[in-house]
Length: 110
Image (tube, rainbow, N blue to C red; front, top):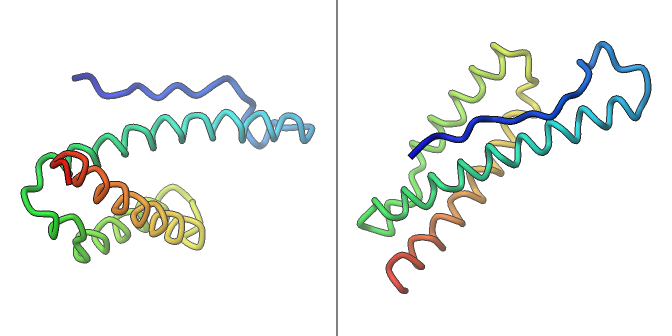
């Protein structure tokens, strides 16, 4: 299976925006790209649910902290505020875990 290629619509760079319409066009384009990426991430939750033999393995505190630590490093390297990155990813992880529990249950007919 091929990994999704990210498709970001044409938009101006933030520094080139002259109007709020330019800003909104850029934000909307990035939101659509983020939805594509999150859809692919969700598919990995389905794969994890399929692979994990035990439902108790869905929640893994050490893995959560590992993911958040890696995101914080990536955020610092790219200039993304950790005050944005950390809570966004903690919420994303929380929702992905809930989704994975549901997927695990669907996979096994529970």
